[in-house]
Length: 406
Figure: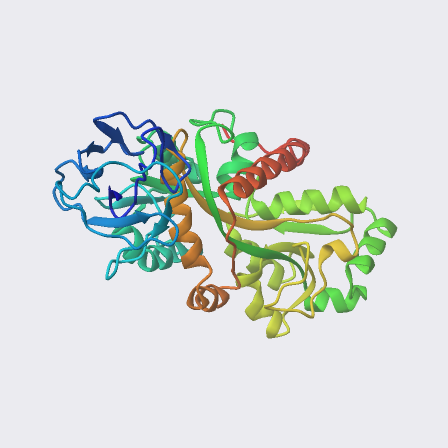
């Protein structure tokens, strides 16, 4: 019978001496002497019709018998007369007592570096570390490397310029891949072309909040009330943010554009000062991260008018979605995983498989939920298309805001 042995348990079938198929769908020609798998591993085709892997330290060997329908697999000796190849009617049949086939993927035999372009301790860093822990059984050691600076551009640029071998991956975020390309006069990388998407990781809603006393005084209970007041009192409202070009600033600009109102923008040096200004009544409303705003919402200090995601948040289901009032309005904070452009598709597939499984684990959903964050697992194609849409969406918003970073 014709038996094949592949590396890392990935089988290579040679029933016709014409084509060898891997589980990845990759094909390789089988000559009379040897064939190659997708990693360039040489396999010798012997007179017994057995493909044996070339010597490689630490590579486990696995085999499967191929038999004709209805015929049991047998071990043939060179003199049994059964050592010639059979080329028709074969089917797969696992050899007894052997491990089941694993999903084919290239072996990763050294630690993976996951570059987080922000400081340790924040939500992005925490979620990255949680996933690194969960994928250690499937990918091995994943080392978190925090490289903050330039609004995230510094760390992301490291990923863009790393070898495309799967051993350096990184975080992409709404700031680095959708806002910064329009905000910074010079970018060290091209957000649209320098990366291979792996999967989205997280979506965190933003929330439109008002100072509770201000909302009560102005009799504003809904988004519609806020829009009506803004139109009746042009220029009297003001909105705070964590700085020019910040996610909160751009969400406010999108809201003013879609609602047809004007409000004075007051930038602060970070999200925390902006929230303190709102709590003290210095500004009327802002767009804040739901995780940051939730304690003050629950304490009654802030009044939440809407979350900015397309649907309501499961964390605070009583708060309407902005799209219920302004159709199509959707702004959220997101981040995901990318590799350098030209990373082999089989490597991307393996990384995606491991991280998607980690994101879908119940423990991950519980842990992320404590930060009001929703795990999001998407295919590489879906995440690439999503980032492209986000990049397009933010261009006119950033330009209309007038924000620029030299």
